[in-house]
Image (tube, rainbow, N blue to C red; front, side):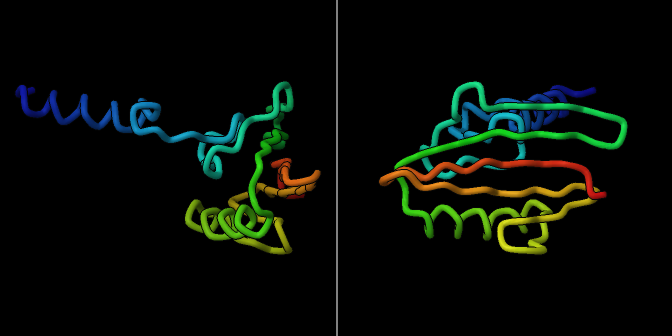
Length: 119
């Protein structure tokens, strides 16, 4: 393989796997769903089971942001990632369901992301 091919291959691998260099942050446990702005992972909120019938994931993020802005972001970004909204804040992709459950406490919004198999 020529040096140019090695360079292209290494560049491609770095682009895929070295996301911190790009400043991208993703939801803990759901590595293909980005965090909204500077929302933070809620410590110890990740629950992950990988079973024969599919994966079960629950994780929570929170931040001091406007409810409509955050929900609008996820309603726009999730379809670009293959998720189709079937009910308000409930999405399907392949054989999985993704639910977003929101709570607001003062100026802080929390979102629990739950993924489970389509039954």
